[in-house]
Image (cartoon, rainbow, N blue to C red; front, side, top):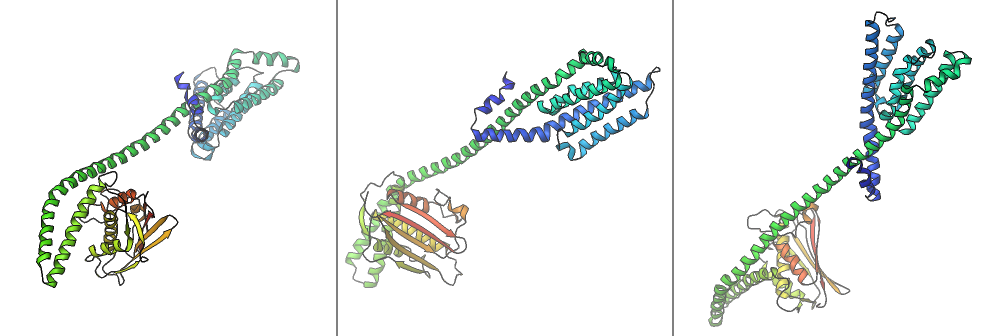
Length: 452
């Protein structure tokens, strides 16, 4: 039966999820299902009482409604109101015991007065038959049945002479209505408990799968966004290849013209300007070449051994304009070499220095960048630290994503740190970003000391 397969599916779950289901079942049954079942049962009992009182009032042969009947109805109504509006609602199955004892008291009083006749206890028996559904507990159902049998035995002993006790009790217990009510209670307790556990198991599994589906959809949305960024990245790579062809030809011509002008120049002031022009032309060529390298899995040239201080001097010279007014402290030991792609690593330094320059507030009394290099075992650790405005923790995780930037200026494509991270991977190195918002930011580069 498909409806009763919920527990079979729960048993196939890991142990921690089975425990989570048990907590879910206890919470749902105690605070939602059992109070609802009790409301329905009490409502039916109260309606049955009103119908009984109406019969007494309308029947010409009936003795009429007595004060006992009204008192019984008022107490029953009070129990229903208490269950509806007080903490009694959460104390399941206390209300079942209270209603049972209330009905048993008046029912067995009538049973004794009528010399052990069945009609006074019919309502009580019908209520007992529903106890299994109200409590969903075999234990509480059996307890109430045992208490009821005890009360029935005592009431029968009081209702008939001692010589008729055995026959009167046997007659009551073998009555088909009494037997059916006593048997229905435990059977319904077992069946409805099993039914509810399976039904809630299916609800639990459905909620669990909905949560998994929501997480999957969220992951797909993130993946879709990353794919869109990757497509932009690929488009930029294709564009860079085209730019290399379109820019390098006129750039080579301009470089040759500058070289020729330098060769025939005899003016020392003009010579410095021509050298500066040649340097910036080389920078343009390096930037375009680095974009092409960025689109390739690995650079197409071999790792070289270069002087780390010289690379930083070149990077500082290229960033001279942006670092104007900044105290740059270069703490690199003399003759420290590093195995690298010199042009690519210089581009990393340039990007990081430009980021530091943009992070330093113009109004700061002291604008400072500290550059350090420390050999550690087989690795070389390079630190670039500024005292700028810092980076929020949630932004640090995304800084190396293509096209992501905390600088919202239109000319900032958000590619600098992404390119830096790719270049570091080409060097079998790592890049780590640490920051204290409002205080400082430090980028730590880790490079192997020997080529791999």
